[in-house]
Image 1 (cartoon, rainbow, N blue to C red):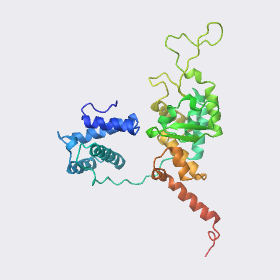
Image 2 (cartoon, rainbow, N blue to C red; image 1 turned 180 degrees about the vertical axis):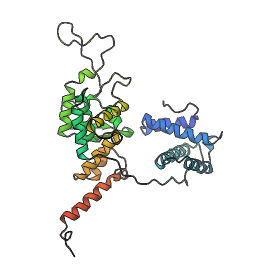
Image 3 (cartoon, helix red, strand yellow; image 1 turned 180 degrees about the horizontal axis):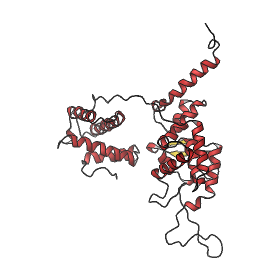
Image 4 (cartoon, rainbow, N blue to C red; image 1 turned 120 degrees about the vertical axis):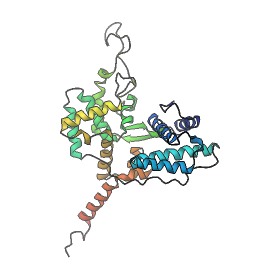
Length: 321
């Protein structure tokens, strides 16, 4: 089911199965939780994770602190442990929840990294001039910037989602929850341009000797259910493939590749929308955040917008005392 370590207990396997079936956790989340629980089990030095005590958990938090683990990573591991022991308690496998009084490391509030609108324009201009597959590169870049999709959502889009000049995307995100995201005109045009040449990216059917679409006995053109097909095992462009493409585009645009990533483009989408008047609730829906508090990392934009609003429009703002 997952690529979690084989040595994990049957209780951990049951927990991961519940997370997959009932909560729709992604394979990446399941793998991370498996590693987290395996690491905690190792800290017990032969002890059974089922019978771990509150003291064992406090000791593990101290171990993470000695490792100088990033607060966000430590918080995720504690969240995993909390969910695991709540599961055991709910299933009557434990009479108590040892995480009930456990404190998570405090996380400093870091502002999301994003590009300026001019830098995004430079990336788009560079994508259009790439020597190889510029139409596909432009469609990918326009689409992620226009919708704020997670990279896994972008590369795994079905072609049916954009057929017929769709004005909006229906995306199945984390937890298998669906959301609708409008698509702007520039992104729609880039997608239509790519659909016209997309067949060149579809790998031929096994045993095919090429594509012949006209004449008697003509072979059928190869097909793919994915918007961005590839000859890899998954059948579509992978996350690392898109990351490499972004590096190529960033270099061509004269922007440091270290500043450009799929998540930075997602942050840029959100930041620029708020800067132009979008509200947090609408943004939350488009980003697929379950909790509005996650979307509130972008309030630095709202604070700046409010400051400009007061400075530019309040009747006393320019009054010299």
